[in-house]
Structures are given as C-alpha cells and as structure tokens.
Picture 1 (tube, rainbow, N blue to C red):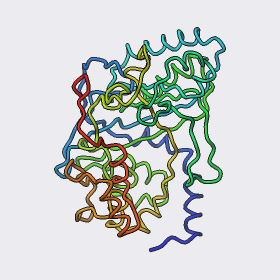
Picture 2 (picture 1 turned 90 degrees about the vertical axis):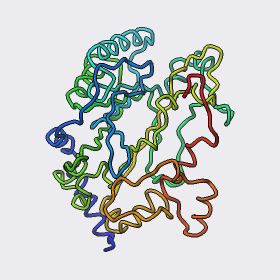
Picture 3 (picture 1 turned 45 degrees about the vertical axis):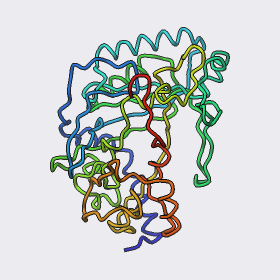
Picture 4 (picture 1 turned 120 degrees about the vertical axis):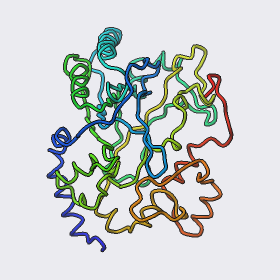
Length: 353
C-alpha cells in the first residue's frame, strides 16, 4: 500500500495535534525500569553512564539505555562568567551528591557550544581549543547546512546543551528544576524529550505504548516490543565501543594542547530527526526495512526479527559499500555508520582501551 499526498498530510496534521500531550503520557506508561547495578564509583567523565544492564535477545547482547532523556539547549544569561561558574558548580555538586551516575540515578552531561567559547572566553579558547590531527582543523567546528536539509532549517547557535538521562522521570524533573528553576543562569532555547526501550522480555515497549496512546499515525504498525519507533534494536553491545573510546585523548587523534585542558572530554552531536511511521511501515516491506536500516546485502533475516546481529564478522567495508551501491543504488544506514566510525586498524590507548 502506497501513501498518497493527502494521506501523508492528514497523518502529519494528526500527529501535530497529539504532540503536546505526548510527554504527559510517557509518565503514565513508563512501567518498570530494568534491574540496574548500584553503588558504583563515579567516573571522571560526565558523558559516561555506568550501571547499564545487558540482556540477550536473538542471541545478541543488548545494552539497555536509560528509559528517558531530556536535552535542554540554552544561552548564558549571566554577565559575570566567573560568578556563574561558581553557581553552576555548586548546583552540579548538589546533584552529584544526590544521584549516582547510572540509569537508576541520573546522567548529566554539560556540553559547551562553540558560540560560548567564542563569545565568553575567546582568549582561553584560542589557548586550549582541541585540534583534530587528521583534519588539521579545530575539533569543534561551526554547524553548517547539508544539501538534504529542508529549506526552512535553521542553524542554531546555542551556548550550552545539557543532557539529562535516567530511568526516573522524577529524577529528570528534579535536575531540570535545580538547573533551570533554582538558578538564573540560562535562557532556555529548546527542550527535547525522548524515551527508548522498555519492551524486552515480552513486554510492550515505551515507544509502542506512547505512540498508540497518543494516536500517532502508524502507531499500530510498530512491533509491540520494539526498542525504537522504527522497529529495530539499536544498542547492541558489539556495536558500541569501549567505555573510554569517545574521550579526546583515547585514540590519539586529538591534539589537546600543552595543558590538556579538555582531557576526559568528548564531543556531542545534536540534531533533529523527523520520522514518518506510516511511510516507513507501509511503503517498505520487512525486507526493504532491513536493507535500509542495515545493508542491502544483509543476510536473510526472519520476518519480524527486531534484533538483527551486527557482530564484528558482519562489519561492512568501504569497498563492499561501493559494490553494493553500484549494484543496487543505495547504502544501508549501519553500513555508512560502520565505515565512518570504525577504526581502520587496531589501536591500544595509553590507558589500555
């Protein structure tokens, strides 16, 4: 069944009407969080989240991320940067004392944008900015438009983005209250909330529950226990790197300067993605969805499989992708990600990673 333009526009309108109440439904439909380890030491890196659970689905180890996340972008309101730093540091210390840095507690990652460095601390930025050794450019570059971006796409210039993650919506609400209610440091520019998982072990997942309750067009087509709206499992353990691999210093690809100011830091990409569930499930049969999400020549996958194995032996190569594209005129999502993010050769970091 193909979508007509009229059906597509009608679906988009219904989705927009239901969007306002979606996150109220999340609170009602979250269900129980998976068992999580507790009592873990706090890592030096904010972006790490220890205490995640691992299950086996379709003979594949799957990491269970926090059920909920909230990304808040903002600009700095305070004129006195030093004073603002002290206030923010005190607030972060308060949250650190209250919550473990785990899904059962609270993951809080504070990311400063290029506009912050250039507007607020330009001299310090020039002295300490990390540089990409391969590209011979700064490791943090201005955002740019892509050819595929819609005409109305706006490039944001936020000074800060704060990512909150937890199995508990109460924890997220408390942290947001401390940072954006108790403090008067930020002018919030956007709040982006999300949720994932909750459906393993035969239960109906959070994306499925929320989409159905909100009347999102195409919700009935989502597999009942799908981790994501598009049906497949994303967080396979074999597809994730070692816990410190994202650190600037781990692979030796970033020049941190004489004082290594950004050691144990990393970069965070923020973007918007629009998903049309009806188009995905009605215009593509299962085999086409597998080919699009993974690779056109993905070995045969049984109808209805959600966790498609993506182990080391199944990793695609640049030459393989070129052959597939010449033969079929398309490239799978996982294939493109694998060749752009996987190391071309083995590398052992100074810390053993």
